[in-house]
Structures are given as C-alpha cells and as structure tokens.
Image (cartoon, rainbow, N blue to C red; front, side, top):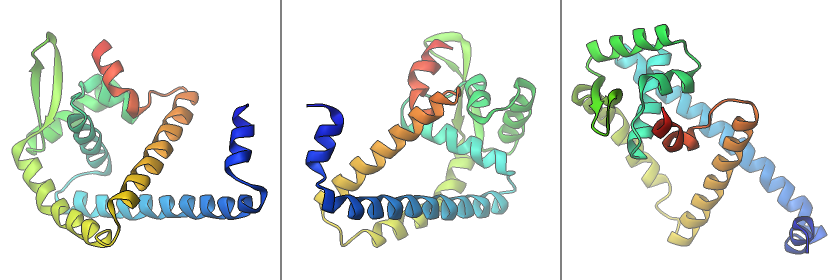
Length: 183
C-alpha cells in the first residue's frame, strides 16, 4: 500500500471536503496566532526599550535554552539572517541592557554561548507569566486527550515548516542542536 493509498483509506471521499475545510481553518488559526503573538512581542519590546530584532533574538535564545542547546553568536546571526558585525552589535547592546549574558562553553573553551540574564529574564517573566495564565485559562475546558492531539498536530506543522525552511536553504530552528554542536 502506498502513502497515497493509506491517506485515501484514512480519509474517505466524503470526508475530503470536511478535512480540507478544517485544514484551511487551522491555517487561518495559525496565522491569527502568529499575528497576536507578534503584537504581544512588540508590546513587550516597546515596554522594555527593545528593538524588534532584539525581541527576535531573545525568542531564539529562549527557545534554544529551553531545548538545552544554547546559541553561539554565530548561530544567532544565522537564524536571524544577520551579519557577524550586526549580531555583535545586537549582542553587546543586549548585554548592556541586562537582557543577555555571555558564557564560555564548558565543553569547548573557544566557543561563547548566549543566555538570558537575570534582569531580562525577570522582565520576560513579569510580562509573559500573565500571558501563560490567560492561555491556560483559555484551554482549561479541554481534556488531556485533546491537548495531546493538539500537541501532535502542532508538532507536525512545525516539522513541516522546518522542512520547507530547509528546502529554502536556511538552517531550521529544529536543527539547532545538531548545528550548534558543529559550530
């Protein structure tokens, strides 16, 4: 049985139009989520005297820290599409403002890693903890099975977007651990 045969068996013809409609709705929901997340990011940036690229950098650094693979300045520049000089300026400015700190990589003393610094982390927590509380309240009526399914769907979408990003010739965030380990 081919992949298309399995897909056809799993989605009978009558369900195709419903599936297509649901996929369009999910796409619209993701665009709306991206838009409101972007708006919240701009409010956080303005309230903390950050530039839009500063906030983007913090997002990449926070994601990498959460995944256990802190970023080097070079990797941050690659993810953001910035030159070495531009990322150096950004990092220096963010260190001065208390949002970032640099630390040597314990496994390779030649490398420098970027982390949130305590004042920046505190500012992020002050702003985003209430955002998380609102999000948890919004999904409180959903059961664990619904949340598991949602997580699987979102993970699949992130994977698909990462593959598309790779096809465009840029390093995907999901490959941070592998690429960070190399350089």
